[in-house]
Length: 270
Image (cartoon, rainbow, N blue to C red; front, side):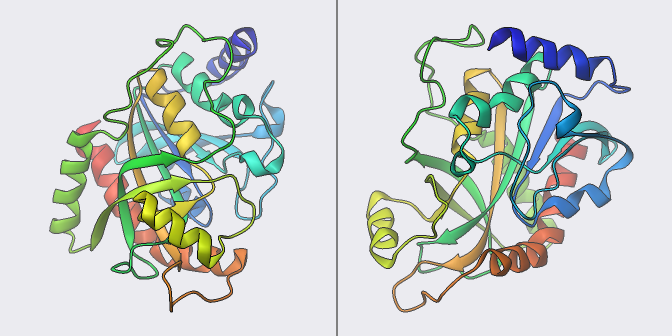
């Protein structure tokens, strides 16, 4: 796999006109943040050697180089999911390519179902920790020499970036929550019993992505900041039938607030 990572990075490097140290992975319904990216240069996933192709509605499938908050960035408009049939090595392949390209900071976003009764649809939850509930670990197999065989995960999400994000949210009068995100394989939304179980585990929100990418980023020495948009409620008495379209609509509504926080965080501290 290391050879494939290096070949992909070489392909992209030959087409890059900037030198970004910050990358963003945009989740369901959050791809419109690319409208704030200036001086864009887009490459379709299907044109990138060894790259998977996103198959989920709301995930456009483009790698974008440009500027956000006046800084060079790389953005993934659409991510890959375990439930699409990809292995964890394929799901996290782009993160390892980012490391080869010199990325130092990764911003991740996703849509989630809240298990915390204090949360409401549309809330932004800054991720302070996560629970890995995927059946396959993204570091399973031979260790790629980007990090140690047994990487520490005591600070998966960068505390300094969280402090700065809190300050930006306060300045902009944006309500944010802090919570633990649990990643599960999907593609089904959770049953009421599963929501209750995940709440007992200590999760505040549940989704189908992010955790594998964060684990690999930390293994690569990349610091991480994550935001989860609450798009449905997994709280007893508030659970209703949910569709992917409902999730997209709720994420679209929250997108401007998330964009404000990420843009300012990149502008000031990267």
